[in-house]
Length: 132
Image 1 (tube, rainbow, N blue to C red):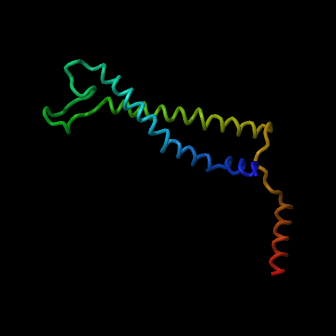
Image 2: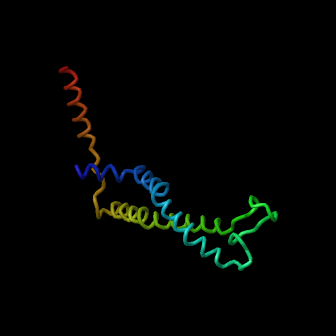
Image 3: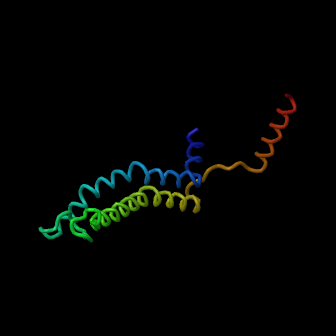
C-alpha cells in the first residue's frame, strides 16, 4: 500500500499541484505577514523624518488616494522571492535530485506493468464478464 501511494505521489502533475497549493495557501500568508509587519516597516524607517506614510510619493497633496507606496511594492517583491526560494529548495530541488537518481539507476522508479501482465489482466476480466 505504501509503494502504491509513493508511485501516485511521484507522478508528474501531483507534485506540480502540491507546489501550487503550498504557494497559494499557507506559506503565502506567512510570508506576507513577515514582509508586511517586518520588512515594510524597516523600509519605511529609512525615509526622512518629515515624510508621513513611509517610502512613497504623493502625486497630489492633500489627496490620500494619489499616494504611491513604494515600500509596499518592495515588500511584495521580497515576499515573492522568499516564497519562490523556499518552494524551490524544499520541494523542487529534492524532487529533481530524486529524479536524477532514478535516471542513473540508483533508485527504482514506480513499477509499471509489463505488456504480458496487462494482457493477462484483460484476459481475466473478459473471462469474468463472460461468466456474468
